[in-house]
Length: 126
Image (cartoon, rainbow, N blue to C red; front, side):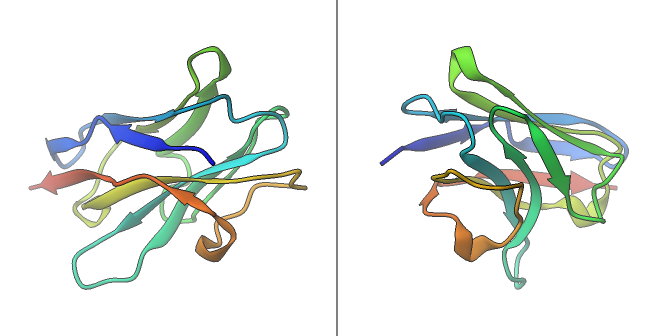
């Protein structure tokens, strides 16, 4: 079991930047998976970015490619989501989630993740 706590959300104007953090209660470990997901009001939760710990292979949703970067600091048990050039449609509640491995590669499928944080709100305004 691992507990995940997100932080770093807030309100920002379109075009701005935010960095989200996800602190795990213990070291995630090599070949385990961590992902960032978001849920906008009235919409289903969707995968945003995923990282395979160890080789640090990443995967992004098409909607955020080139604007978001997922990374991890193993010494701090922390996974980051750097978000640039934010758009109105990036608004939502952002969650991090973990999937125990060993896993072959990054994955954005919600049902594959076993442990979830409570989320941090990101609001992008014009």
